[in-house]
Length: 342
Image (cartoon, rainbow, N blue to C red; front, top):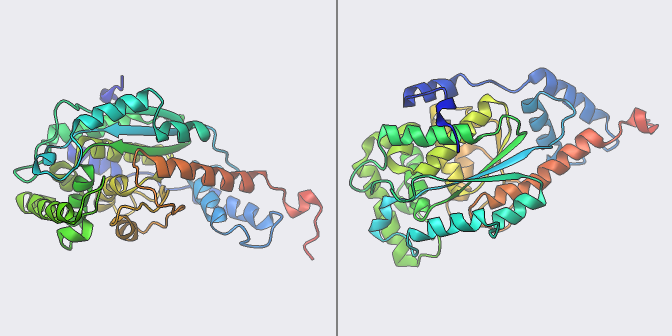
């Protein structure tokens, strides 16, 4: 059981203050890592983005020759009252059924976590009490939102050296799209995708529901925490709490798809550099994810047409990040290898 009492905030304003005063990467270590990178047995820049990823990771971990030994994957699940508007092909019961599948080891995220040596944890957040339908009022009270943030915060293992957050929740692409509309503007159709397989009429309905959500909750516009509270869900709030805790602990984060990035966007709206300790694991096939990544200033590591959620794309990207660190920390320098540089 996660102890939410370990979270050092009891209000949304206290959470915001923690995030706004979060630690920065270690620039002295970054310089050392850059010097090492320049001496490795390869032409300058020959490993492309792998070099950038290794330097980013080293700076956040405060180690110029780091290793990834304890990656953590945490999947949060929540149910959404907005499903009453008919925006999903699947009933909310599926959320609990998929949680059971995660716990039984039968989902894609279980296989991917095992493949890359990541510890997987699953947290179901009051599945029997969906959030409120945000077309008629805020999805969550401040207390509900804080409790979910606290659970996410406390779920992060302080000994982890990499974090991936995943989600499960019928209706949560609608929630993520509504947050996107609130924070980045446009119209509902800019952010509404097919989710689990909506047809054109379903997407049109979803677009309308998204716009109604923002109209009902005007305080969410341009306000990260209000967008999270009024339009989000418990699992999105928990993701935000976990990403924030990772920042405090200087644990690098790999972001997953559209829903995870919507939660991260709420943090970026609080503080412009709040998610500098994160990279985008992949470009999802969910239509608005590419636009979301552009707003966040994140270039995806992978682009494989994935749209499963669960943290699957980000977990797959652990392999690439591990490879970048292995090359940076394990390769010989020209001097060590006795290779002439000219």
